[in-house]
Each structure stands twice: as structure tokens, then as C-alpha cells.
Length: 302
Image 1: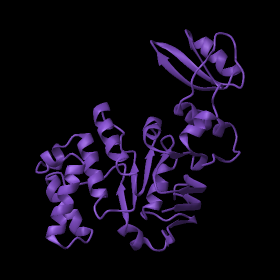
Image 2: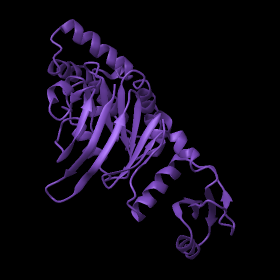
Image 3: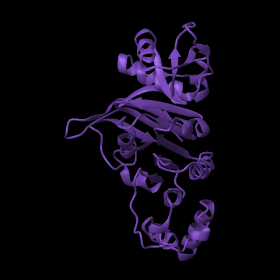
């Protein structure tokens, strides 16, 4: 299966340019779409999910024109938006049966088999008769995946699924997502870089509606080997001085002090030590370069 997004642009009535001539090719696996809030991730996902039309461009899925054959796409699509509404007083069991009917499952026996299996798969069986209003954030997200899987979709889109989850719920949810990407296309849209590192063999970084980088996380990391340097600074004045002299890609507070991470082909000296690169370095480096120059996206080899 291949999802091909070609030169998609979208400007909203208020003048916000959410997508700018963006192109991507996504294969049959888990694909990570990373970017800051407001990058255009949700706009792209809503467009792929046939919830809005772009101003220009095209999208195809295995030869199906996503923008023209919307009903065909909706039959093979599972979608978990960033925020989704449910009837709070209805149980998870009843709600899934209701949604299954809406997806065209007319056979009661088929619905029961499908719904029961999904409740087991998402670890919601023991709470299946409880009202959705009583669910924790992680339970609601797992229910969201259960409804997205109704009809055995070939394309699944999940938009910011771990935002707001505690660490235990986040790990449970990531384990569930990882089990889905082996035989279908799953797009994980998130601003949490670590989610992509754990799950996705390929990824893209977008910001301000533009594609900054596309490729395998491991290759993106390899490109930074020997070029990341770090140092803990004690004062804000020292931090500002470093920011004027070096290519600072990120700062983190460590014990009340700033840990500065710098991108440089050679040692900056002055107490900086070589550090192992991580996917956050890839992310912040591309964002910083995008803010300085509009040179187009980097596409890493397969």
C-alpha cells in the first residue's frame, strides 16, 4: 500500500497558510509525522481523512483518488482525531456496537465478534460496561483506537494520541499502536519526538506547513554523529553569550541550570563535550534551520 501526497496546499479563510506545497510518500508501516503545535499536522491529517479539501494538490492511496473518491477512502479508513466526542453516558460496549452499525456491519453475530475482539485487543474488556465519561485519558484513547479499527481499515490515522497521558498510560498506548503497524499503513501525528523514535521506521518533520525532513530516524541520527556538543552553564548571561556565538539547537534545565546543546562540525571548545545525538536533536536542528532559511526539505534514502 502506498499513500502519495503531492503538492498539497491549504489556506484558511483567516489567512493562515496551514500547508504549503507539501509532498510525502508513505508506505505500508508506521509513519511518524512530527512538528510543533501549529505546524500543519492536523490540517494534513484532516485532509487525508477527507474532512476538508485542500486548495491545490492531490492525494492517492493505492490508485484511489482520496480527494475525489471520498466514500471509497472512508470505507478503508480508521481515524482517531486529536479530540473526539462520544456520548458520555453510554458504555464502551454499546458505543462500539452503535459505531459498528454506522460502519455497515448489519450482522449481529459479526458485530459481537468484532466488538468483543477489539475490547480485548485494547485492554478494555473489564470496563466494557462502564460509561465512557468514567474513563481515564488513556482509556479514552484506547477506546478511540478501538473505534478506529472497526471494519479492519487499511489506513489508520492517529493525531496527537499521547498528549496529556501519564507515563504508564502512554506506554500502554504506544504498545497498542506498535501492534497495528505490521500489515497496514498507520500515520502517527505528534509533537512528541520520543513516540516516533519508539515506533516508526520512517518519519517526516514539518513546520509552518512545510516539509523539513523525510526519512528513517536512524539515518537522521547518523547524520549528526560527532556534531552534537553539550555543556551545563550556570548563568543566563553565559547562555546568551553562547547563543550569539554558536548554533544552539536546544536548552534544557538540569538541576536549575541550563544544559546547552550545540550543532558544530568541530569542537566549540570552552568546556563543551561531545554528546550522543538523539531524535530531539534532529527535530530541533531542522526547526532552527527552517527559521533561518527556506532551502527545501531533506529527503533521506530508504
